[in-house]
Length: 193
Image 1 (tube, rainbow, N blue to C red):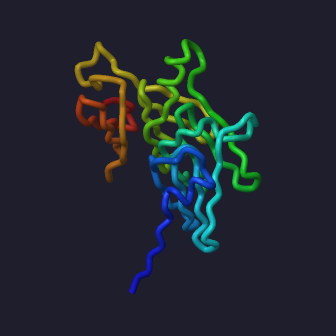
Image 2 (cartoon, helix red, strand yellow):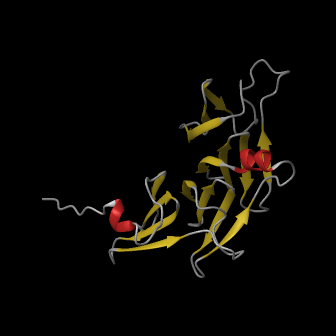
């Protein structure tokens, strides 16, 4: 049979101040569990131990405490989508490298373009992410961003730039939910909706 163990949120409050819910969960190739909440939580099942990472004054901390998505790339690197951009986790040092697409404009504009809603890795060296202001492709080789937005001159374009969850189909096309506007397919080879 199976056994289970409950980890109440109240128990985790000693580790993570202000936790009230889990935004996302991810199991990596090593069998560890990652949770996004008011910080990044790593669970080591073989040790029954939690580690919590939170934003602080250090340049090596995670971008922001609001964690919405977690993914592992083909090189087994963990990437985290936060309210304020993308973070790469360095397992050797427990440090993070921060990446933001755009830092020009008002605080609200910067946050909406860098708030990562969902994140997914392909097998061609790219991460794909949805934000409140567009679809982004991030190159794992040169760390550059490419943005895909609504094109009013194209009748086949998406109808808005406020995206939600994403997934790949068996053909390699990206399926993107667009808040209150439906679901769209994005051809990742020819880069069009």
